[in-house]
Image (cartoon, rainbow, N blue to C red; front, side, top):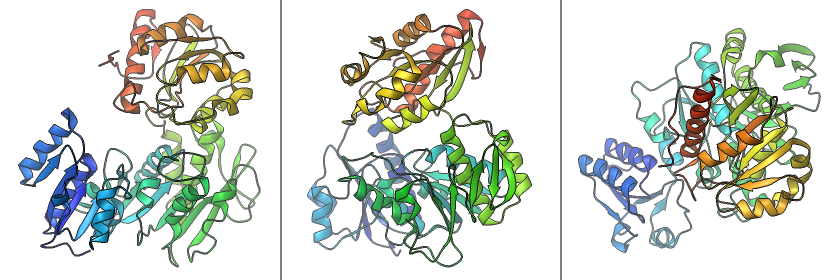
Length: 462
């Protein structure tokens, strides 16, 4: 993409926008950043733009920000359908997503993963497996390291493992990963995508531009995902927890098989829950299809302990285990978490809801949950859905929630933070929420002399 000497307007001012600006400057463009918000977080990034000598506006999208822009790059969290971007498109500006823009300058082979749930665990695992194979790899995308920042890495890494959201795929036109993985599609992000079918079509763009020599890894157990790569020229690698496959990895009891050949086992992973077996099969499929050293990859799998905020074991005291699943921001994530435990669960849930019908989990909650501790905006709605099945109580803050959970738990139980909601009514993001939970649990473990799986964290609501 030729942007040298051209004005490029970046919409939104997060970490991704700053990385895009740096890449634009390297390519000789004249970036301008337009941000609708204000505040402390924005101010810090404005300082970075000042240091780079890049002009910007905050508090709204002015018409002059888009005038004469050859390209408009919306940040992933900014819908390309907002009025200022639509006007710019009508005036002749090209509207290009950050992933698409960064891809045009990428010199690394890309292994890209998308899906409603499991993206972060699968990408983290893929990175660990590649590192175990002795390959140079950087993790980027829908996480703390923007794709544009990874593209700026010198020397360029051999591989980039890319976590890809529907927001990034929404604007993709030429993006082409060497290995593309789609894990699953369940209801989410309907505020951005009209319905489930539209959302699934966006996810299918992962395979749209793949060619002969590329690899498409698909979840055979998900009917929407199973056929996504049917028209692709790529080699399709299905994986399944439920069905025997002649080609692709499948679960045969406690064995992981490739056709009739036993190639790995459930005992090779430390990750809890059946949903994580899906993530493991997806990552191993990419490794096997990519021709990497299998034994070295299995050694990496055996040492991989999981990802922060994803059913993360925080510690144990008095026979009660504590788990941080703050990444649970939708009903499917909560379902996965509850299905991961044989123990009775004291569940801490609630937050900023997504217009979810919680009642679809009534049977599972009745079978697995011992007590509900509810927080945030959707606490009344969750209590209405389950209060006749399970005793429920409200907590005003995380420290209160942990105290109530401890009081309700008995030896052999699990206290699980799995909110099924976004965090923005009380916290900066799900990471902030998870850290606060871990700090409160650590305070309890320290007082009780329990065992901890984590470094000490403060119980800080700020």
